[in-house]
Image (cartoon, rainbow, N blue to C red):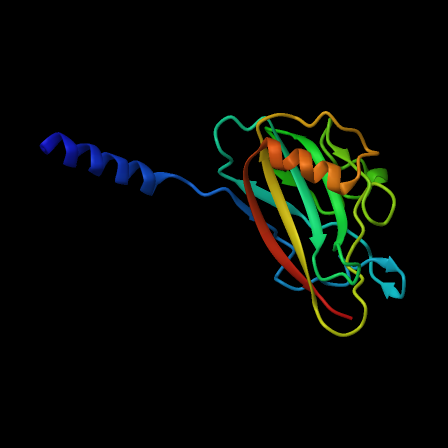
Length: 177
C-alpha cells in the first residue's frame, strides 16, 4: 500500500511540473491594430504579420507550423489568412513581418503556402463592417516535417497537420471595421 501512495505522489508531482505548450505575442493585445490589418478590399492597414513566440513544446517535436484562420468570414467555410509550416524545431519565434516573403524573415526551410487570398504569405484581417471577427492564430508542434510545398491548399495543409500534430497552442485576435 505504501508503494501505491508513493507512486501516486510521484505521478502527481511529475504532472504538476509538466509545462503547457504556450503561444504568445509581444504585439497583440487581443485586438488587431492597423499594423496587422490587410491593405486592400476596403481595408487600409499595413498588412504586417504579428510577432509570435512559443514555449514548452513536447518532446519529439521535429518542426512547427503556424496558421491564422477567421471562422467568422462570410464564406461558409471560414478564411485562411496565413499558413506556414516546416519551421525548424529549434526556432521558437517568428518576428514581426515574417509573413512577407520579400523581407526574408522566415527561418530557413519554413514554407508559406497558399492562403484564401490566393497566394502564399500573410494576409491580414479585413472583415466586412459590423460584427467583430475572431482570428485564431495557432502554432502546432509536429512529429514530422510536412512533405508539402507552397502550392498546398490550406485544407490540405490542415489535413496533414492533424495527422502530424503532437500539440497545439492558440491565441485569438479580434478585428472589426
